Image 1 (cartoon, rainbow, N blue to C red):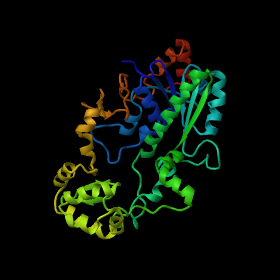
Image 2: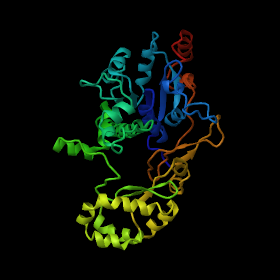
Image 3: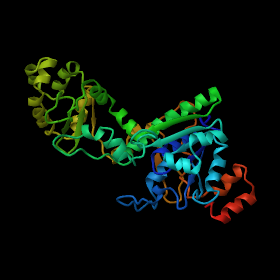
Image 4: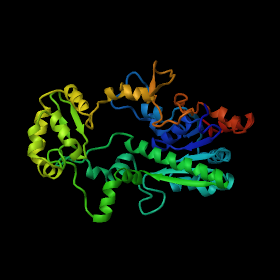
Length: 399
């Protein structure tokens, strides 16, 4: 099998999660990804897992988002450091960064500056709000730019509770897929035109895209959509309900006229179908019916209701807990998890790329590197001789 990005060289000058996870997916597809780290390494390396994972000494998110890469440590604050990175950038296909525009200018690593030394570079830049505009200088993480400032947080959760927090890396990994798609499209355009390309992805715009239906409605009406309220649903069979063992089922039957009769039969409540004989009457009675449906679900456990819902071929899912997710036969069959040889833990598994390409070699190719693990090797591969490497190491520029 051929790796889709075999022969493609990527230089990553980025930290934290989003941009590095995009580059990690390129490594999964066979690209040679060189990660440039500052002295001490990517800032994410120093974040302690909460709660700590005793069996793994490092940061698991860093491990996930930097697998299959090679690491070089360069102090760009020292004379010659930024010039060394520019020298590496002359010989790559893709440059991935989340440097702010002022820092990129300071180090000579803007698109315009790199295009001068590499007229075929694909420049992929990631930020919280975009690199231009009134908010471009704002600091942004997924909790702020993606979750809060995109509008997601305002429409999630049930009233009157406070808007809930997102989970860590939720916005970063979603944005990474956007950046990957844009970068690969830019790479194809580069190959077609022979000219350098620049693409950009921001957390805020990605967040807005994930609730695009709500945003589109706001564009037309100028109104804030109501938060979902499971106690007062607009459709009682597009809702979540608890079961007797403390678990939950999520029903998703928008085509109420198609499913309603089967749902009543499944619940052994034919009287509901008589009381609400058509779609309109069901929606009008939703608030009255929802507590009755909840009471019925509370009579049995999740296993019982799962069998019943499947027997009647209704659209539903259990609200799965993560130990169930990682042991899911479906996800295991799909290859969602893969073993990686790792010195820190025997039998280490990580999450595979969330896509597959038939007949292509897409796989996790190794653990995340230690800071500067490949510094000398990388410089040799990029054409520097032994004396140059020794001088850089002696000056403290090379870690």
